[in-house]
Length: 73
Image (cartoon, rainbow, N blue to C red; front, side):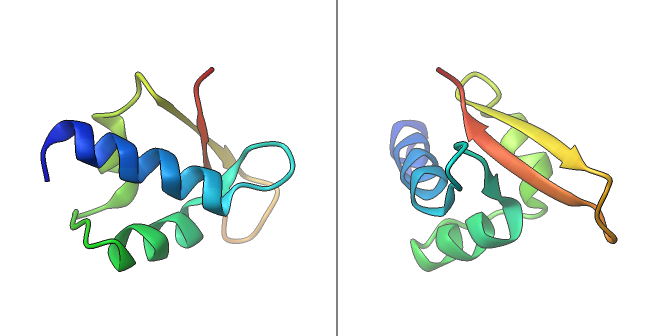
C-alpha cells in the first residue's frame, strides 16, 4: 500500500471503531486494520508516523491501561 492508501484505511478504521466521542480503542482498530490487509509491528509505534492525521491517548484508569486513537480535525 502506498502512504495515501494507508491514510485512507487508517481514517476508515478510526471512523469504524470510534465511540460517540470519536475515540477508537487501539485493540479494535488493530483488528480492523489487519482485516484490511495492513501489516505493522506495534500499532502505537506505527501510528507515530501518522501523527498529522491521528492523535492518541492512554487511559491509565483502566487495568491494563487502554490506548485510543482519534482523527485530528
